[in-house]
Amino acid sequence: MTDGDLEFGSLPSWNIKIRHDLAEIDRLSLTRVRRVVAGPQGPQVRLNGQLLTNFSSNDYLGLASDPRIISSLQKAASFYGVGAGASHLVCGHSSAHHELEAELAAFTGRDRALLFSNGYMANMGVLSALSSRKATIYEDRLNHASLIDGAMISGARLSRYAHADPESLQILMGKEVQAGSLIVSDGVFSMDGDLAPVRKLKDLADFHGAIFMVDDAHGLGVLGKTGGGVLQLEGLNQEDAPILMGTLGKAFGTYGAFVAGSDELIEYLIQRARTYIFTTAIPSALAVATIESLRLAVEETWRREKLLALVNRFRAGAKQLGLKLMDSCTPIQPILIGNNESSLKMSQELLKAGFLVPAIRPPTVPKGTARLRITVSALHEEHDIDALLDSLSACAFYLGDETDLSGGEGE
Ligand SMILES: *Cc1c(COP(=O)(O)O)cnc(C)c1O
Image (cartoon, rainbow, N blue to C red; front, side):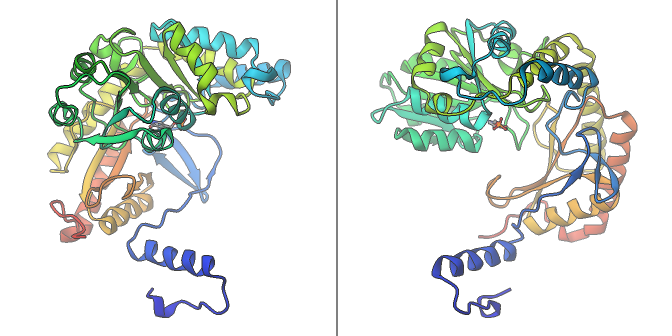
């Protein structure tokens, strides 16, 4: 569609603008669509009457529809009701929230944990509470959008270093002490699946007197012996990494988020984090269900073991097919395509073959790095992986030289 095709008529100017922008989004193959899922999350999902093998969810451990968690949600709702009724600081903080916070503190090996409504709000709350206009927030270029937005509303200076590159960060930080500045990184990068160099980031934070924060939304539950995430894997404790943010809607299969750290940090967030103070608490029954899911995530170690085996099987097969894998040991296994249209086409071909695999395009990822984001679950079976590999091989052939593995969009 070009501007000439648009019927502007007597529309008000804001409406002309959004119509124009929508046409432009469409022209760039960047239109996002919501697929309507009928029924529960799982390794299979039903979409428009078609049963698809689901390689797109963040439900890595397969807990989102676990009958034991469903039953604890149901029972708890009979006791607590549905809505929390108010914010935590008014009368919405229940014994269930309190107990979940204690469990999350024990799980992460931190003094204390604080529940937030979701990860987006947790990041906005922490960054705006802890930084000042005089400080700088240093962030990895590929950090999650909520960390970027948190830095923006904080009013601090935002400085972004090259992805997973401590040397680039060192250059930006110079030689001075930067008390009050923050170094902030995803633990596992959500669209690449690789790990942050947390030890080196910690060393730089120590050297400059900066605060180190890790958002381990995709590592918790998945990495480390008991699912303690990238910090457990790398052996970093509360002193090394004083602020740990985690979400509950990914590997733990429920909803919500938390920040864990020292008593004083948590007390400060209760007083100062606006996204904690000025919002309704999550339902108590959800907190009870999350206590159950946390227990299952820790105890059922077979889920982590099976995930790893499936990831290895997928990588070995994809390598044989000559597909472009990324440097990832996690259940996030993207295949780099390059241009938007080809990744969209490939995703559509996979859908026809019975697989739900999203095409991830800018602005979620940098221009010219559109990709298929394949995510593996502990509830997949080996034959699911093999069937996906067969279809990937078939549609890579179908796309032929349209799949520009080296290229970008040239914009
Ligand atoms: C998903 C995600 C968030 C946001 O968490 P929600 O609970 O979904 O709002 C924050 N950070 C990262 C790295 C994420 O992947």
